[in-house]
Amino acid sequence: MSPSKAECARFSVEFPGGSKIDVHLFDLDLVGPLDEPSSLEAERARAVRFHKPEDGRRFLARRVVLRQLLGVRSGRDPLQLDSIPDEFGRPRIEGLGPLRFNTSRTGGLFAVALLEGSDTEYQPGIDIEMDRPISDAASVGRRILSESEQRGLGSDHQMDTSQLLRIWTRKEAVLKAVGRGLAIDPSLITVPCQPEASKGLDTVEVPLEGGPCAVLLQEPADEAIPDGLLLAVALATGA
Image 1: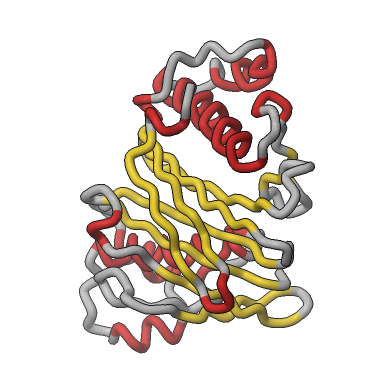
Image 2: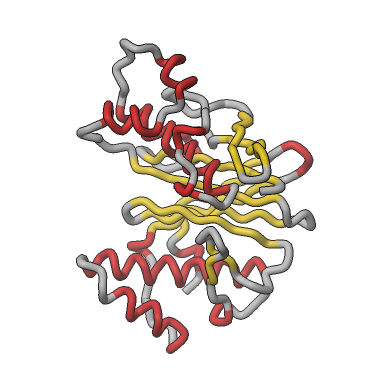
């Protein structure tokens, strides 16, 4: 299976200093057939434990697509690319050289962010969410918004679910770039709160054990991605 057969979007996000994150977006329901040899045996064992067969198939599809894409970019045999989580749970694959990656999924969509360069301290982060209703948006907002964000929105602000999901997507991309994910309370970082895609570069400070880390955050224009999808890309250094 060639990754391009299921690819529904591809674009690059430029950062200062010449860093470029390539984003590939896949429709997992278009991936097939999932007839990889015994190298997927462990994944198949996990897939059957999903409550919904559809979720198990999408899990296998993510593994196949990621292996194929990383194999194409690194010149390695995709079947030899096994993911091993680091101390913070971030997926790592040995032997990719200057190629680093991060992934995100929502429903049947799967995004992969690729960063290539000699400075391996730079790490990509990506998050995607489908725009959808959230029944308890107000309580979710109180849990994830920083004090600065709450002040900026004002006490009488009625949290729109699309706006909340966009804020959440920004925070997730930043936290994934530093490799901590939700091990860091999202209310400890402040991101832009505007309801539309940001048109420029933002810097977000993340508190880490060794001191604050500055993470660069960008969003592609809405027309670059499928309707109803929210997407943010981040670049961290020294995390």
